[in-house]
Image 1 (cartoon, one colour):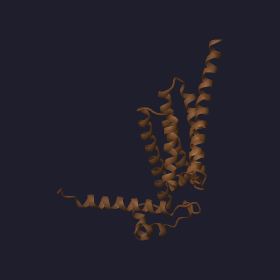
Image 2 (cartoon, one colour):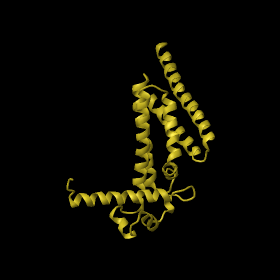
Image 3 (cartoon, helix red, strand yellow):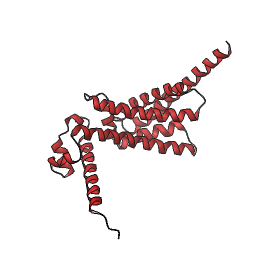
Image 4 (cartoon, rainbow, N blue to C red):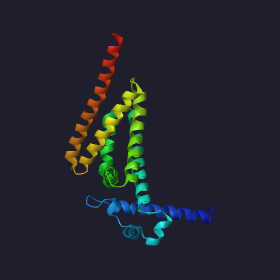
Amino acid sequence: MKNIKPGGVRAQQKERTRRSLIDAAFNQLNAEQGFASLSLREVAREAGIAATSFYRHFRDMDELGLAMVDESGLTLRQLLRQARKRIEKGGSVLRTSVTTFIEFIDKNPKVFLLLLREKAGTSSDFRSAIAREIQHFIVELVDYLDHANQMPHHYNEAQAEAMVTIAFNAGAEALDFDTIQRQKLIEDLIFQLRMVSRGAYYLYHKEQVKLENH
Protein backbone atom coordinates (compact mmCIF):
# COMPACT_ATOMS: atom_id res chain seq x y z
CA MET A 1 0.00 0.00 0.00
CA LYS A 2 1.42 3.40 -1.02
CA ASN A 3 2.08 5.96 1.67
CA ILE A 4 0.06 9.14 1.31
CA LYS A 5 1.85 12.29 2.39
CA PRO A 6 0.11 14.34 5.10
CA GLY A 7 -0.17 17.27 2.70
CA GLY A 8 -1.93 15.03 0.18
CA VAL A 9 -4.41 13.87 2.82
CA ARG A 10 -5.16 17.46 3.81
CA ALA A 11 -5.65 18.46 0.16
CA GLN A 12 -8.06 15.57 -0.38
CA GLN A 13 -9.99 16.45 2.76
CA LYS A 14 -10.18 20.10 1.71
CA GLU A 15 -11.50 19.12 -1.72
CA ARG A 16 -14.13 16.82 -0.13
CA THR A 17 -15.29 19.62 2.16
CA ARG A 18 -15.43 22.05 -0.75
CA ARG A 19 -17.49 19.50 -2.67
CA SER A 20 -19.81 19.09 0.33
CA LEU A 21 -20.42 22.85 0.46
CA ILE A 22 -21.30 23.00 -3.25
CA ASP A 23 -23.64 20.00 -2.90
CA ALA A 24 -25.25 21.48 0.22
CA ALA A 25 -25.94 24.76 -1.58
CA PHE A 26 -27.49 22.95 -4.55
CA ASN A 27 -29.63 20.86 -2.19
CA GLN A 28 -31.13 23.98 -0.67
CA LEU A 29 -32.13 25.54 -3.99
CA ASN A 30 -35.76 25.14 -5.05
CA ALA A 31 -38.45 26.93 -7.02
CA GLU A 32 -39.15 29.27 -4.11
CA GLN A 33 -35.62 29.78 -2.80
CA GLY A 34 -32.93 31.14 -5.07
CA PHE A 35 -29.24 31.44 -4.37
CA ALA A 36 -29.60 34.95 -2.90
CA SER A 37 -31.83 33.46 -0.17
CA LEU A 38 -29.29 30.86 0.96
CA SER A 39 -27.72 31.25 4.38
CA LEU A 40 -24.00 30.64 4.83
CA ARG A 41 -24.74 29.14 8.25
CA GLU A 42 -27.36 26.72 6.86
CA VAL A 43 -25.14 25.67 3.94
CA ALA A 44 -22.23 25.02 6.32
CA ARG A 45 -24.49 23.08 8.68
CA GLU A 46 -25.74 20.80 5.89
CA ALA A 47 -22.14 20.28 4.72
CA GLY A 48 -21.25 19.19 8.25
CA ILE A 49 -18.80 21.96 9.09
CA ALA A 50 -18.73 24.98 11.38
CA ALA A 51 -19.76 28.27 9.78
CA THR A 52 -16.32 29.75 10.51
CA SER A 53 -14.69 26.90 8.55
CA PHE A 54 -16.57 27.98 5.42
CA TYR A 55 -14.00 30.72 4.85
CA ARG A 56 -11.21 28.20 4.43
CA HIS A 57 -12.84 27.15 1.17
CA PHE A 58 -14.64 30.22 -0.20
CA ARG A 59 -14.11 33.92 0.36
CA ASP A 60 -17.88 34.48 0.67
CA MET A 61 -21.22 33.12 -0.58
CA ASP A 62 -20.79 34.87 -3.93
CA GLU A 63 -17.58 32.93 -4.59
CA LEU A 64 -19.42 29.70 -3.75
CA GLY A 65 -22.19 30.69 -6.16
CA LEU A 66 -19.72 31.41 -8.97
CA ALA A 67 -18.14 27.97 -8.42
CA MET A 68 -21.64 26.47 -8.75
CA VAL A 69 -22.24 28.35 -12.01
CA ASP A 70 -18.91 27.16 -13.45
CA GLU A 71 -19.67 23.57 -12.48
CA SER A 72 -23.20 23.72 -13.90
CA GLY A 73 -22.03 24.95 -17.29
CA LEU A 74 -19.15 22.49 -17.45
CA THR A 75 -21.39 19.52 -16.59
CA LEU A 76 -23.86 20.36 -19.35
CA ARG A 77 -21.12 21.03 -21.92
CA GLN A 78 -19.51 17.68 -21.16
CA LEU A 79 -22.84 15.90 -21.71
CA LEU A 80 -23.35 17.65 -25.05
CA ARG A 81 -19.79 16.75 -26.11
CA GLN A 82 -20.58 13.12 -25.35
CA ALA A 83 -23.77 13.48 -27.39
CA ARG A 84 -21.77 14.74 -30.37
CA LYS A 85 -19.52 11.69 -30.12
CA ARG A 86 -22.62 9.49 -30.36
CA ILE A 87 -23.74 11.50 -33.38
CA GLU A 88 -20.45 10.74 -35.14
CA LYS A 89 -21.42 7.05 -34.99
CA GLY A 90 -24.73 7.77 -36.67
CA GLY A 91 -27.91 9.51 -35.61
CA SER A 92 -29.71 12.81 -35.80
CA VAL A 93 -27.67 15.80 -34.63
CA LEU A 94 -30.68 17.78 -33.47
CA ARG A 95 -32.59 14.91 -31.85
CA THR A 96 -29.58 13.61 -29.93
CA SER A 97 -28.55 17.07 -28.73
CA VAL A 98 -32.06 18.17 -27.75
CA THR A 99 -32.83 14.90 -25.96
CA THR A 100 -29.54 15.11 -24.05
CA PHE A 101 -30.29 18.72 -23.05
CA ILE A 102 -33.82 18.01 -21.79
CA GLU A 103 -32.67 14.85 -19.98
CA PHE A 104 -30.03 16.94 -18.21
CA ILE A 105 -32.72 19.36 -16.99
CA ASP A 106 -34.91 16.46 -15.88
CA LYS A 107 -32.09 14.90 -13.83
CA ASN A 108 -30.50 18.17 -12.63
CA PRO A 109 -33.34 20.70 -12.25
CA LYS A 110 -31.57 22.67 -9.51
CA VAL A 111 -28.44 23.01 -11.62
CA PHE A 112 -30.38 24.44 -14.56
CA LEU A 113 -32.54 26.52 -12.21
CA LEU A 114 -29.38 28.23 -10.94
CA LEU A 115 -28.26 29.10 -14.48
CA LEU A 116 -31.72 30.29 -15.46
CA ARG A 117 -32.53 32.35 -12.36
CA GLU A 118 -29.16 34.02 -11.88
CA LYS A 119 -28.99 34.91 -15.58
CA ALA A 120 -31.42 37.70 -14.72
CA GLY A 121 -30.36 38.10 -11.08
CA THR A 122 -29.26 41.23 -9.25
CA SER A 123 -25.56 40.28 -9.06
CA SER A 124 -23.51 41.55 -12.01
CA ASP A 125 -20.83 38.95 -11.21
CA PHE A 126 -23.41 36.16 -11.55
CA ARG A 127 -24.84 37.62 -14.74
CA SER A 128 -21.36 37.90 -16.25
CA ALA A 129 -20.43 34.35 -15.21
CA ILE A 130 -23.60 32.89 -16.73
CA ALA A 131 -23.16 34.97 -19.89
CA ARG A 132 -19.67 33.43 -20.20
CA GLU A 133 -21.10 29.93 -19.76
CA ILE A 134 -23.73 30.56 -22.44
CA GLN A 135 -21.02 31.95 -24.71
CA HIS A 136 -19.07 28.70 -24.23
CA PHE A 137 -22.09 26.79 -25.59
CA ILE A 138 -22.32 29.14 -28.57
CA VAL A 139 -18.59 28.88 -29.36
CA GLU A 140 -18.66 25.07 -29.24
CA LEU A 141 -21.74 24.96 -31.46
CA VAL A 142 -20.19 27.39 -33.93
CA ASP A 143 -17.08 25.21 -34.08
CA TYR A 144 -19.27 22.17 -34.82
CA LEU A 145 -21.25 24.02 -37.51
CA ASP A 146 -18.06 25.34 -39.13
CA HIS A 147 -16.97 21.74 -39.67
CA ALA A 148 -20.42 20.34 -40.44
CA ASN A 149 -21.56 22.68 -43.24
CA GLN A 150 -20.14 24.88 -45.96
CA MET A 151 -21.52 28.22 -44.78
CA PRO A 152 -19.36 31.19 -43.71
CA HIS A 153 -18.44 31.57 -40.04
CA HIS A 154 -20.73 34.57 -39.40
CA TYR A 155 -23.75 32.59 -40.64
CA ASN A 156 -22.89 29.75 -38.28
CA GLU A 157 -22.37 32.20 -35.43
CA ALA A 158 -25.80 33.80 -35.90
CA GLN A 159 -27.37 30.36 -36.22
CA ALA A 160 -25.69 29.10 -33.03
CA GLU A 161 -26.75 32.15 -31.01
CA ALA A 162 -30.38 31.69 -32.09
CA MET A 163 -30.31 27.95 -31.34
CA VAL A 164 -28.83 28.35 -27.85
CA THR A 165 -31.35 31.10 -26.98
CA ILE A 166 -34.29 28.98 -28.14
CA ALA A 167 -32.98 25.90 -26.31
CA PHE A 168 -32.51 27.74 -23.00
CA ASN A 169 -36.00 29.25 -23.23
CA ALA A 170 -37.43 25.79 -23.85
CA GLY A 171 -35.43 24.46 -20.91
CA ALA A 172 -37.15 26.97 -18.63
CA GLU A 173 -40.51 25.51 -19.65
CA ALA A 174 -39.28 21.93 -19.19
CA LEU A 175 -38.70 22.53 -15.47
CA ASP A 176 -42.46 22.48 -14.83
CA PHE A 177 -43.46 19.82 -17.37
CA ASP A 178 -44.38 16.18 -16.82
CA THR A 179 -43.05 13.33 -18.99
CA ILE A 180 -45.66 13.67 -21.73
CA GLN A 181 -45.31 17.45 -21.89
CA ARG A 182 -41.53 17.14 -22.03
CA GLN A 183 -41.72 14.74 -24.97
CA LYS A 184 -43.91 17.20 -26.87
CA LEU A 185 -41.46 19.96 -25.95
CA ILE A 186 -38.59 17.90 -27.41
CA GLU A 187 -40.46 17.49 -30.72
CA ASP A 188 -41.39 21.19 -30.82
CA LEU A 189 -37.80 22.22 -30.03
CA ILE A 190 -36.37 19.96 -32.73
CA PHE A 191 -38.81 21.47 -35.24
CA GLN A 192 -37.91 25.04 -34.21
CA LEU A 193 -34.17 24.41 -34.42
CA ARG A 194 -34.59 22.70 -37.77
CA MET A 195 -36.38 25.82 -39.03
CA VAL A 196 -33.46 27.99 -37.85
CA SER A 197 -30.97 25.67 -39.56
CA ARG A 198 -32.87 25.56 -42.84
CA GLY A 199 -33.52 29.29 -42.68
CA ALA A 200 -29.80 29.96 -42.36
CA TYR A 201 -29.09 27.63 -45.28
CA TYR A 202 -31.78 29.34 -47.41
CA LEU A 203 -30.51 32.85 -46.66
CA TYR A 204 -26.93 31.89 -47.45
CA HIS A 205 -27.80 30.33 -50.80
CA LYS A 206 -30.09 33.24 -51.67
CA GLU A 207 -27.14 35.58 -51.13
CA GLN A 208 -24.95 33.34 -53.30
CA VAL A 209 -27.46 33.51 -56.14
CA LYS A 210 -27.51 37.33 -55.87
CA LEU A 211 -23.72 37.48 -56.07
CA GLU A 212 -23.62 35.16 -59.08
CA ASN A 213 -26.17 37.32 -60.92
CA HIS A 214 -24.14 40.50 -60.47
